[in-house]
Image (cartoon, rainbow, N blue to C red; front, side, top):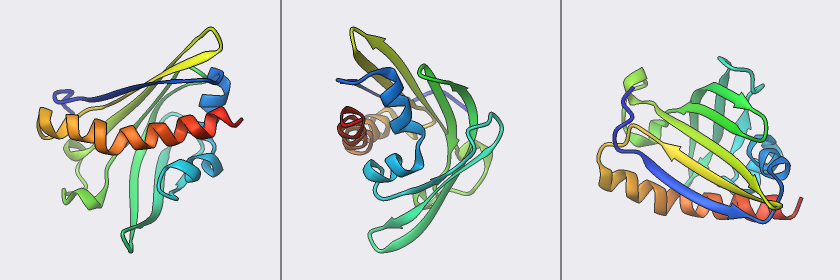
Length: 144
């Protein structure tokens, strides 16, 4: 999988890394900010992860694999969605990385998603998709 054309989005959250980690990994909390998605995984490296839900009236099931889990520091998965129109093949998966850094009671969360079709597509993904998702995650984490 290539790393070119990486979507990157950073947000500062007025919450501990523990709260942000909980918001990233607890399916009930993820559902609150990720379009009502039902996330299923055991968070063990090499295990499958699934995101199921409905988008614009159509059911979907995205999938991937857990690649790295370092509590309160790093979470990394692969991700593929049939809604993107690509075949379910390894070269069509993204790697999504969440890096957490706690500073003075706040957490800086950096999200990176690789394997975008172009830099323009990566920038659009960062702003139009991940921007609102991270704002929602921030709101959830700040309430914990």
